[in-house]
Every structure is written in structure tokens, then in C-alpha cells.
Image 1 (spheres, one colour):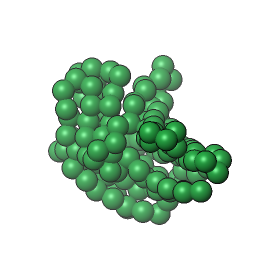
Image 2 (cartoon, rainbow, N blue to C red; image 1 turned 30 degrees about the horizontal axis):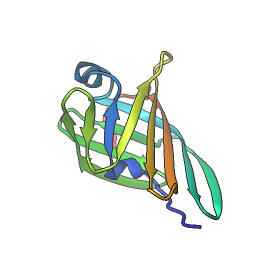
Image 3 (cartoon, rainbow, N blue to C red; image 1 turned 45 degrees about the vertical axis):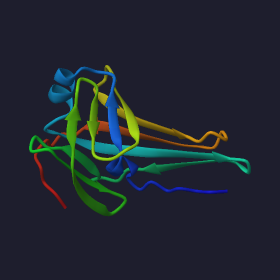
Image 4 (cartoon, helix red, strand yellow; image 1 turned 180 degrees about the horizontal axis):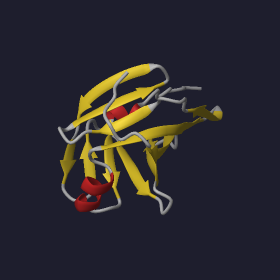
Length: 138
């Protein structure tokens, strides 16, 4: 069974938004989010594995106004450039994440990579707006 662990797979991915660029700028850019959890599901001919990794106090993702995304998750720090692409996407890699901003102001990032043979890897990140929207990196 092939297993791909994405400690923060979105760091090498494209985010595709169901909202307009105006909404992205208002609700994502310049904001700090707490990472509630990551759910990973992998499927191949041997079966399906699913894992849930709970976020810890202090885990975050920040889409800074300067075009950088900062993350701290699973005791790993990372920084990358990101770029808005049209009305419905943000990129810092090559695999899309669908972003849903829920009525309760939680945010879900969802990625689904499928292969022609039916194998797939799916990942969900459940985020919430941080009480501290200052950029304070670990």
C-alpha cells in the first residue's frame, strides 16, 4: 500500500477557491488561521487508509499580504511564495485545493489527487480564524 504522508501538503499545492478574488482577499489574505486537524485518505488495490492528525496549540497557516505563506504544523516551519491566479485560485505549487469558507467562519482546504487506475490521495485541512491575527512565527 503506498502511503503518502502530507505533513502540510498544501505547501506544495495550488489552492482553488469557490469564492471570488475579492472574497479571497478579504477572508484569506493577511489572515492567520489555527490548524484544527488534517485528515488524510489514501486508496489503492490493497485498500484504503485514513488518518486524522489533530492540530496542536500554536499550529498555524498565514497567507500574508506580502505574497508569502507561513506555516507551523506537526513541529515543522515552512515559508513559500503564493500568488493569486484570477478569480478562483491561489498557487504555490501544482495540486489544487478546494477552499470552502463556512458560515461559522471555519475554512476547509480539500485536495483530491486521482490516478487513472482509481488510486487516490485525499487530504482535508480544517482551519479556524486565529484569535491572534498578528504574524508571530515560531
